[in-house]
Image (cartoon, rainbow, N blue to C red; front, side, top):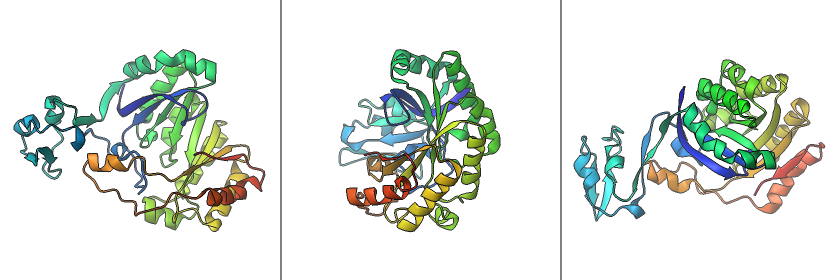
Length: 300
């Protein structure tokens, strides 16, 4: 069994409890303008180019069968419309300016990497998280990976947008210890307008996960001008209180950490200029949850 990954991040403490390894899979049906992993959106491998690392040797241009690369002012330039993603430029780059985003890996290959830190998982209450993109676009791979991790005595965590088929969840949930579940907006029209998909299947999938008895942590990306208004925060708090009152809630403030990745894969950053939310506004929004007796934390 193989899956398309774009990173395996070891020693993370942001993707579930304890020390973890996070396996990032490619492919996502959502179009969040603030996405910090734009290299996850497509299912196929892509070329990432970092101009700062380019020495202008011209090897990539000479090897490109589509003639999509030229050397301009001592740096490579990729015409993304001409590029067919053959990745020959990556193989010939002398200084890793050209890098491959997306690798086909077997479950065995992933297990070999994440098993190195098993002692840390056990000591810290951590484990392995599968994220993306949307991991449920590759449910058979996640199912086999989680089964194998359980055989190794390693905790499993699914990080999901919630926009997927119930059939995909049915395959994976029996082997899942924890789900990190995103709630981005309560209004389906607003959600569809900005992100490209409605909320109804997401909310139904949350109920399905809860009915399966899997522990859930709710994660709310806090995006100024999109979902930070009092009406939406109050509605989100009431929804969580109704359906999963015992779940912990993480509010994740907007940041631009992934902005440079957009340029590296040849696309514009779609998020308009946005200020980071102030501590006072975050505290104000958090109060909608704590006033209902919910366990809520702002993660900085």
